[in-house]
Length: 356
Image (cartoon, rainbow, N blue to C red; front, side):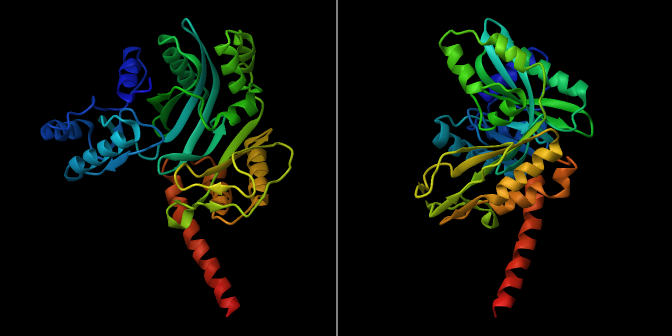
């Protein structure tokens, strides 16, 4: 399932809905690449077969851009994953990214621990995740869970994994994207609404200690709502360019209904060579509104000196009406970034005028 092309084949074999796409392309045959583009239709996505985290993924608007984009994605995939295989996939505009948390016990048994919305992304990487995914019709929610469980059971999957889908609100359709065969960054939001400890469950399963009953119980009831924000050492005003350096000061809030998973402390240096995520802040509440309010308060109370972060941008994003009204889609961050830049420039101009 770690190979996107093979995963699509398996999903198709058991009737899970798929977007239009090609098999891996023979890059030596330009005509095959161009024919694949026509078959899928423009705009489309070029994706690495062995990729993850959005690395190398490119939007192609027309036939003239296709060969260059395919070669670029292939080169980046080869460098990042040791496999330059790529394929084409239909681009579903303004769709939501919804994923289902599964846990497999092997032997064709698996459970679902509900879903998460991960639509808010920059550079195809998630920055806000929440559970359960808001505003999904129950019938569709059940269907996605059933598809995810069917896939996990079909391959006798073991351990924590995530089955990812695109959900189109206008048509009430969902389509399989990929399966992440590992625990993901956003596992805390699932843990907050279920009470499950997915990391502990993986360890117990690896030690052949049965955790089926515990996880089955956790999968039976949702407790409130949880939202996670990923705090990065980066500059949103420079298209989220990383901001490495020494953390001169780091102050974190101590609040109820907040969980903070962090990888740095005051005095540490953020390296330019790795992903610049500093921490994850998770807000929980009885409702989505309460979870959001708790998260905004916590994000606003964090202080980081010495490096730039996305804290102000995240707070702005969480307070925008589109987020509050669940008008979510995978390009929303790009739209809100432009709005935030305009507000930030205005604030800086006012400050400069006052100083003069």
